[in-house]
Image (cartoon, rainbow, N blue to C red; front, top):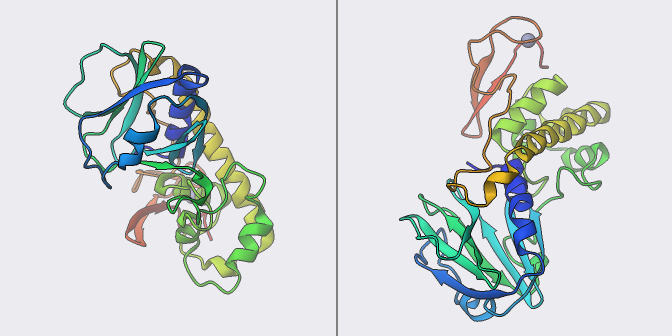
Length: 270
Ligand SMILES: [Zn+2]
């Protein structure tokens, strides 16, 4: 599934082809995604000029002079830039056709993605309740500490809650907690400020490394096969149950927390 780093990599990959370009047309071959594609997209996008391409959580925001197209890649979606006459494959559901002769193509085999239109994206229901970006100043130890007081929820679930902070997916939560030495089941409200300082630093570091790893794939966004932008990262604990911990050599454990597989070291995380 595309996580925040993959979406950020996608943003960087498509941005140079979109900004300043006028949209000539939109071709929708399949409207039934996670939610049906809004008719407003057909109405407003053609003729609009792209002013910027942003990301909020795992949403790509294609900002234009009159509003924003909000694209989510779902479980299996990807975006690439193609020459407009490139034949569409079976899962290529949407083309945003540019005057430049290129198109932004959205491919999504499992159709859990979505495409919405909003005149004011910050106020859109998908985005308005989201917590801060993990790589922004607003995400800090004091913020996590104050939001967690009195809460018994496991810290792993707490940092994966998009109302608290966006973009900390299952892999990144396990990895960050290992690096910070915090047990994933520890109650969020019982973690001291100084430990949250370490956790915030490790979350940022893990995500930044993943974004950097994705940066090496940027050239694949034009003329690629639609699989570009996804990458493997070296992982300390995720997917490594039974293997030796890199710090203490004892086996990595696997538990289920909040219905998600959670990998950790019993000896290194408290
Ligand atoms: Zn260990």
